Length: 316
Image (cartoon, rainbow, N blue to C red):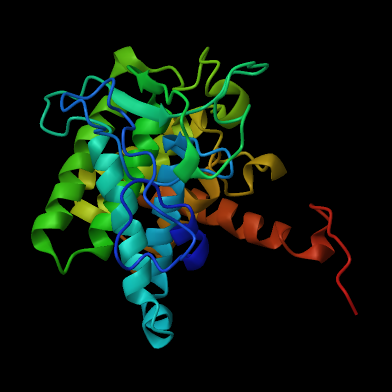
């Protein structure tokens, strides 16, 4: 997610430092029909593309990855004068994600999973029937609500956890993020809520359909461990049953590419890094070694000589 592209996709009342001269405030009544204030309690966040839909599942993944980049390459961002921009983009996203559920509820009962959208074959103005500037939207912006969805909740938990590390210099905000992440992960682990967030929803399934949620269990658990130091999250991330359900140890090219729908390579890379740098030992070592082995094979699969993936010819 390029910094400039992020500013182009900002929704809501724009910050003064947005820096994109052709963008203006937009979507100021998003969520007005579902939130108590009646004014648009789901303003903010990011539009997915030219369709102006706010898909919270891939948006959360974007925030997780942006935070990981800020953690991993902070010195590079600082050297180029972009670190404050990256943090601004992350916070814009995480502030929005915090609005999509009630973090003070015990337990969290629902998550707003999408704002805007379109049904296939729609004949009335909506986000796909009419592609236009977000500032000019005048059609209805339906809000989707998830009462189950370990995938959505897990990815949101990962996003808030990773961001809490980025903002450790702001203790109050960092704690707010990690607290929200833990509340979301409890939702994700609730045995009564274990169906994908997109299942049967015509506003979501054709666009960002989730194919499972055990990869999000691993992904969220390892980010929560890094954020909180709570060993129960590491125990879950190294639970052989969770790994088996996620097909984490299968040598499968389809599971070797990190994406919004497949977090396994990222989760196992983070766990491999943990093993190499901190070496937590027993009782985690056996599974960490297994993750390390798969990560090694995954990295090798990206090299052309191993003939796992097709490669396009580069220019001379």
